[in-house]
Length: 346
Image (cartoon, rainbow, N blue to C red; front, side):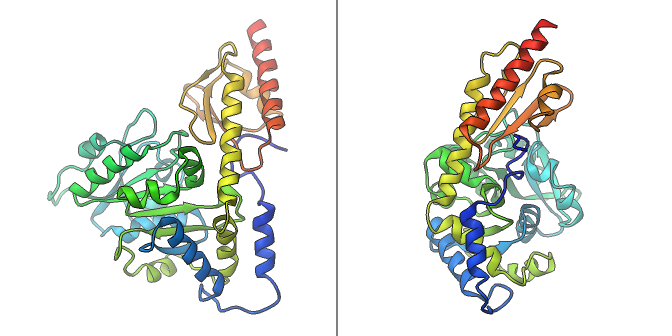
């Protein structure tokens, strides 16, 4: 089965799997991150994000996001985010339940926050009856497949810092964003004022590894303890670090993201012009959002799994992965075309 439901459906990139196998060479290594692989991964994060970057390997995106935000917030402080942010709609309430974090949400049209959103949401400063904003979290690329540009990110950072807030980037698909922008990671994080990043690797071909990367010195105070307390410290950390090394030591992260992004662009081009099909968001990374004629989604999903994003409007989401091929995209477009033709004639 190859579908377009999620880039989490894809398997492990062979180069990542080989790196894990190589780390499992029969020798012993110190546990809990005190191993050469973790040290190498930390070096690579400094190479990509700057010499001031401190990184912590984590198991998964939910744990990484919650722990990162928790590191910046005192009990009475909260997190500004878009209503569509992953931390709000797809973390199962983990920020609230496990992190004790109040999410201060605001509606957006394209999944992106602006300085105006921060101004409208980070309010009642000094009011003891209100949760005090402390973190602004954005997703890059967003849950709607859109991208923040460098000027937009710089403006957000300035707006956050003017209010004493911290800017966090949920980078579950940060490689796709970098590939689409044609920029190194530091150019749209460190250099524009982002304070910390959740670095996603699983959606880009890893077996299961993420990292929290602090870009502002001192912000990670106590994070070693917080990671352990949050059940995100791997005893055999070398196998997580090996995956990150495989992606970051060369251009595997970029090649994988470029493949996924190109597949999404090919898919969007293939469906534009089909009767009753409307692409609803700018296709800027590896996601395509569209509204289909009635009955088409159900028909095509029998062969190619994907998700209905909005049950009220019928909007669907198609995700492309590091292993999505042009032939698979063309086959999917052909199936959609056939289903649309049937729907139009009924």
